[in-house]
Image (cartoon, rainbow, N blue to C red; front, top):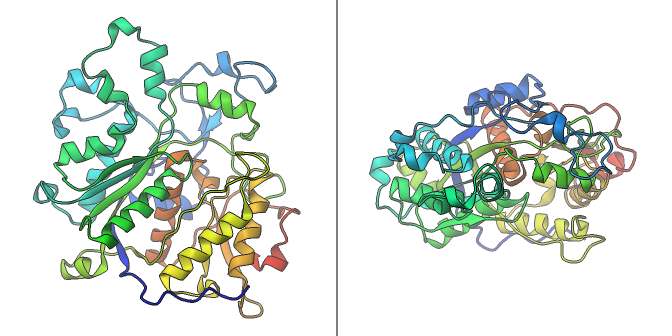
Length: 405
């Protein structure tokens, strides 16, 4: 297949002007996150004592009911700490507020601040909010865990609902643009970015904040993913390596501030990177509902290149989903290689990597973590190295696909 024809009139680039993050390993600022990546830090660790009882729920035999196959992952510190009055939230309401909402309030504020935006000046503006979410552990605890139905309060509903991952921000900052909570599982935050870009391109909003969040405070999802065989027993993502045997779950939040390039330049905003094209697809019918479809992945990448008005051979780096699963890695690497190797000059390889080897798989926040890594790599002119890559996965034809990890 030849390179897709460039778009007749590529849309105006979207400028990424601000970043806010809370990632494992103490990466609470863009600079701290990039330092962690460049220093080759493995930010996974054993389950903190403020979550569930590790010994009660752990057994290496994943055939056991109600047990997890690992006690390791990418965890944050002090997720119970929150400056509620700063965001106009009473202590009574804050008790019932999902930590995911708290993290997004903090990271959204810091992203706007990083982008030089005065939050008070944005009140009543058409600023849009697009946030990816997936798991609702706090809802599980409230409905089936530490609280009985008799203890639920007036703030319980708004404290636990998925829609509030976005609507809470619009309410707190008085944003009047579209406000969407997006659940497409592990692609949630990138689909949120896609929808934000579409909203900016259509003129529906003039500024957008997009991202995603994931917090692990109940063992249920870890048990389910252990039973499904998705998790690595050693709690690390060994993406594209021969030893890849599953992923490590991770938690965190990432938010980016997006603005049409012309407006960003007129307002003298800082610019980390430009978004020139986006695309979304679904696998459709594959070998299993959790098994990726290479054809669908290729179609999405070609569509994004076509909209951006570039040929795939011009791309130098791809931040992969790269979960480190025996099935997913070969399928994804094959799709990437087939698209971006076309027309590539002899001897030139496409560089690929995955942030999951550092911080684990952040599920709904995984995509935005990779986007932030890539934006920082562009800013600093340096691609951080990948961890846990010792022996190339023999199921991936790196030479034929022209790929370099």
